Length: 195
Image 1 (cartoon, rainbow, N blue to C red):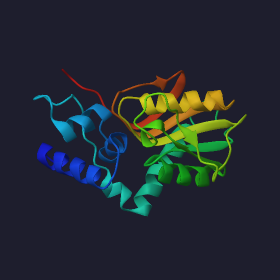
Image 2 (image 1 turned 30 degrees about the vertical axis):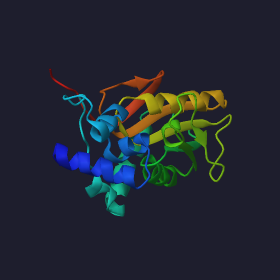
Image 3 (image 1 turned 180 degrees about the vertical axis):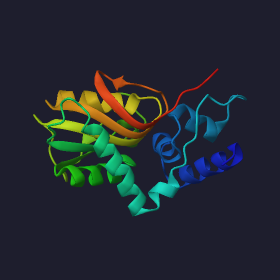
Image 4 (image 1 turned 45 degrees about the horizontal axis):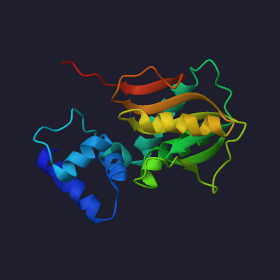
């Protein structure tokens, strides 16, 4: 997908009512890049990488393969006695559901602040329709880490609720991190930039 197609897709998503944080998630780019795609106030785009994993997302069998690999990586964690899998909305939920099924544990869902409002002082919240996390050992599942801010927020919210996050597992890590907020990060693909 070239830049003009990304701009068109970002504008289509905005016209459907999505906020910039949700657009960033849908396109697997940073919020800064999503804003740039919508406004193009500056001539130079932020340094970012677009990830299209729609060939995986469109197939339940491929999703299961990825979830199995995510589960396998989490089990490498020294503290793998897990009570609940936390799926980060939106794209982390299908993977988290499959991982929870594979590990035989409950599923919790976090709606991060970027999906709730454009205000900066709002924190993510857990859905009451899924498992509770208070006082439980958790692993966190998401699709792509772009900046790490959503994952850092997830860890903070879990710790504030008295949960113990023991591992993070993602399909793609665009930052090349080993941990976030002291929690080990396991990624199938770790990206880095050579400049």
